[in-house]
Image (cartoon, rainbow, N blue to C red):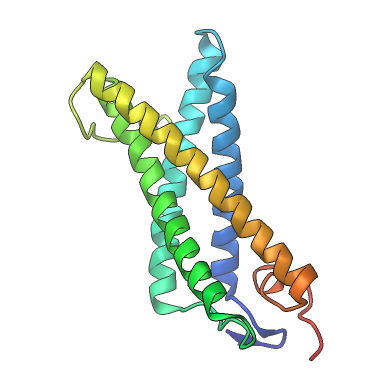
Length: 185
């Protein structure tokens, strides 16, 4: 999007990006915290919050993907090597896939474990699978593995953005930061 700031992401894309990021951080922190707690009302509350966060991430990811279909990303710097362009395209595709698939894997795990997800304690979501303890254990492992995969990918994504900002001195990072000025050309 061409703005007074230059070529940057549109405001809805920026808001969705940072909102999803914040929810992912919160959901990941809850996931790490809740599993080690003894069975208690607090543990059940954290599991509920974790599920609500996952459903919210999924819904926002769908909205973000829909927005992106009609609003392509701003062009990358012309000086960026082809391999970095390809790496950026692949990593963004994987990020989108994971933010859609991880909540689904959690929902499937919850369904197989026989625990219905009730969004914000009000809207019961249908169980996607019948109760199956062995399948639930497999889906739990898949959910955890996908989350750690996302963590690694987010770290690489952030490192690449910082490399562009501090190493390449281009505007790749600031295009997604609404309160930072683009560099003077």
